Amino acid sequence: MIPNGKIIVAESGVSNVDTIQRLSGIGADAFLIGEHFMRQVSIEDEVKKFKNALN
Image 1 (cartoon, rainbow, N blue to C red):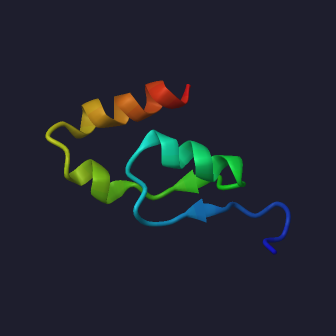
Image 2 (image 1 turned 60 degrees about the vertical axis):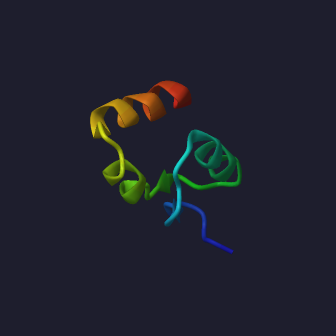
């Protein structure tokens, strides 16, 4: 029901690569995962982990 050409953002509760891959598979273009990162000892290491898993 979302018109073509619109960016689809999956909001809230995204905390792992499997969820991102699943949501991406059904059309999501972007993901809000800030709280997950804020709970990590090293935000930089966690961002790198996500980036590596998604490449």
